[in-house]
View: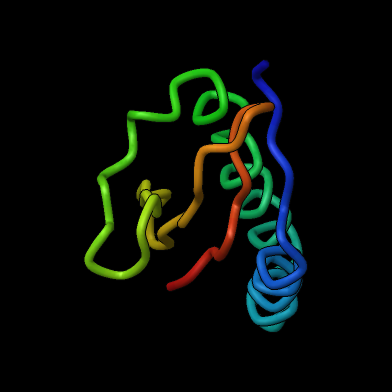
Length: 86
């Protein structure tokens, strides 16, 4: 399957990013969140694209969406996005 799901923390990360960026420009915030979200289907289809980050957590991978890094794990249905950090 090529699906993705977000952890509660990843949902909170995206909300925090949006709130922070809206202090500068709401359109910029919307574009940045859309850019991040647009990567999830691709990562779920090709989950090995991201860099292995077993140094942080077994099975964890990361993929940059400048200036952020998406951290995710492979699951049976695709991927679970664990965090989105700056």
